Image (cartoon, rainbow, N blue to C red; front, side, top):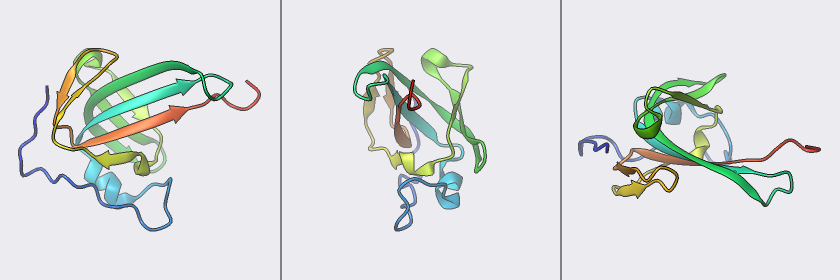
Length: 125
């Protein structure tokens, strides 16, 4: 669906040593305007049972240390804006390839970055 010219930098700046979950300004700046593919897995209260999976793709239209990242979706969710927490460590540079989304059957070609998230309900839920 989305192909990017070869001059688009393919490498996300590395995490700083010791940062496993964080906001990094260099990574945030790199992500701004990039085409990303995101997968989110929602777990049940037992922490093991998968309740739901969501996949979406689109362009990063906002990066903000307080509010996180906003992605203007394309494809099946075109017109929607999805919001992610302010954690740039979740993103990795994508390999040039076609990525098939299980949830929608769509194929995303050569996104700039990938992110996967696991969501667990609060303790006591």
